[in-house]
Length: 240
Image (cartoon, rainbow, N blue to C red):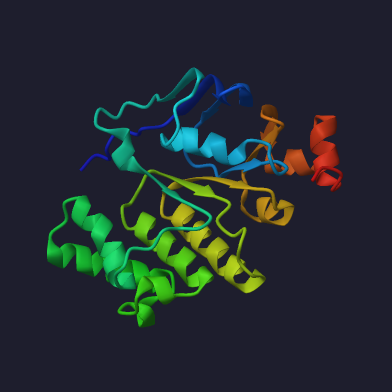
């Protein structure tokens, strides 16, 4: 059996975004390809979350175009998923939260329960399968949100500051799951302002500052020899 054609590359072509008279992004262009972990890095207010929402299709650019340029002929929305900093949990069990998305994707009852249980096992939540999702801790809810997205087997997974509100232990658990999702073949695109996390997870960095794409480089090059004064200042902790 041949693999389905890819929805990648993903193209941001001279994209701008404004809300009323407030300009948030300015003329940003980049292309995302498969098999690299892309981290969108920058100080607070740089436009990272807006960029990710434009990628996922939650927002529409006010200038330029956002498109999936791969050969896939179906609906790209079914091949990508997103996890937010504070995920919304359905009023049902942890298992049912994962199974619900699989039901919408068309899996029969037996298949979705089997896959949902497998996903909970992978993220360390199998003992909590029957617990109401909304009573889980913040870290457990984020792991559940990752399981819910991973269960759909997306080609691309967008993560918006996935550990911003978590303690170090919970953050480490989430990072390990992100690595496992990447190893399973899903492309990771995530935002963070955490330099340590970017060091640990990024293959490449897109660095935003005040709504502009200031620098793009491999993670190793970005941290060792930043090409711009803005990136150097951020790495030194001189930007908020």
